[in-house]
Image (tube, rainbow over all chains, first blue to last red):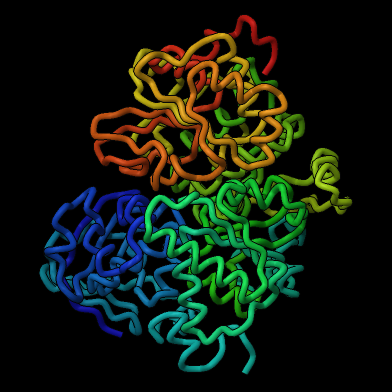
Length: 169
Length: 423
């Protein structure tokens, strides 16, 4: 699974309200419309400017706060190929995997600049910063999660296999 | 090797001899979902081909976030939830019943040793009763609807030993704000936080619920408190006869042990825009507020209303300030009515809202305008959470909230010590 795109950089503790505010989550049910408000509190034009495959790069504790799955969902809907962060809040991390959005822990995010072209190989566990021509290894995604992520999320998994990953064949 | 409470609960639920770091598949004892997360879960359940719920009697569907509905869009969400609950035979808590976490605790169905999941981050609240309770997302909830099972990484436990007698007008909320401020918003990520020590032993269940409610604000997977006689007495009041003790083994391994002395603690306040930006209230005194909110799953319970009413009794909310009071549940509301607290709130000029999440969730009821300042007893002060992104939210205890509403500026509640013998 290879992801290739340009980086959008954010800081530490980007919470779920900043990703998608509660007032929108609780008034808009259409994902298309909801996605237009993604990240707007920190970067008003983000939803307009972001392109398919782009990679969101953040500091520590990305996605802290609410359990709202709309947070990773709007990012995926906008075409974000992966989220790279120094660390993730646990519910966001689970939600991302479950909807098929790669969430990658990476310590040296400060070596990535806004607009850098990145190439992530989730199978080999590598991250290449094409702009600075540096290659890094990334923390592998646990196998239990990989089987969900590689199928594009939990719903796709169930559709394909007719059972949940933890149900016996 | 000995086990922590969390390791024991996850071992029992999974049938595996599990320790911190292991990934297990465990059967849950209960699952909760509300109108903020239900739609995606119902959709995912349908897409997964779900035609029956794992155990309808163990799935709780709550309408509390936009309750009663504020928009036609949400009326449709509620309508879908009602049809879903009826079709599959799961209990539905209608708008006006209360905040999901308060309802779950009041239901008598959360027991020590249980494994509970909820599609809400503050599900960790139930740990005050000795359950392992944690928040999950909507798609995972659909999987629980189907199978009753989910994978869990067994967390390490951070033990927080709280000792000392709380000074007057200093409440459990001040303790948890201080801890979150000290540890930081990611200080306990993926861990179970166990609150213990003499202060917790002496604290009533409502105070304990305030502590565990905010465990997620330091990134924790759950907050948990060893069940004791107080827990069992509380369960008895819910007509639930349960007395199984579950505690850490003597040689259980903890990732961290923190000691907190609260005997000299001052009232605390979390400043915009993060929960860990905590200072003593005294440092913020004089800051003008436009709105005060008393309620939420953190501090909308009876003891919270009692302390606020004691301070407000015979006084008025400052002209130009709106004070919104939303009891956490219908049961809390009725008891507050019987005790005359509601009359005190109305007499002093408060706005009474129906039980629910409204103001805290930022859906309706008291949204803030640009430049406005709100002091809230809830658990999050994220930018834009309660309306405008240009508004400021401060988090504090019910005592600080009442004192602030009277003065119209952030006020140390110890100013009102006279006349309030003990809170």
